[in-house]
Image 1 (cartoon, one colour):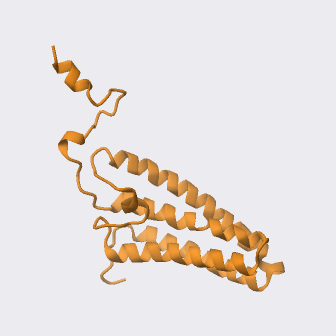
Image 2: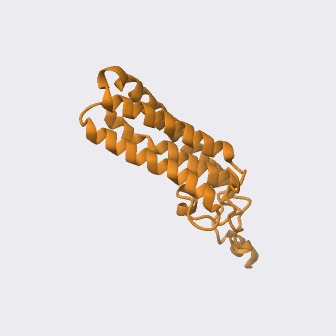
Length: 165
């Protein structure tokens, strides 16, 4: 991977590893359902559950960074904008796109079967996009007047009221 930023390379590898296992089991189950359908279901459910956990992990990391960094939802979950290098965006969104296409295609080939669980697999890719952004994206800093490092239960105008006689 020459020219691809090294930050978060493990996240990209995990995204493609999960995608590869999903594609292999889903296509095999579409071709020979009696043999591979239980395995494909287990893989789809595991990737969905793992993706939900990763999504929550990323959400909490983003919440911490949002105190000092200015972030947009599209920059976090879909890696839009200049905060994510193009090769990283291409790789992670490519894995997500493959998950969506294969999930829909295999569910369409064998409707009303457990292959329909494949449409849940993109949660894996979405969670990993969020995790990469939360850990490695270069978001601009928040303007000083909007930074709140002491996120207590105070209202935004509490400081002003304390200063007024």
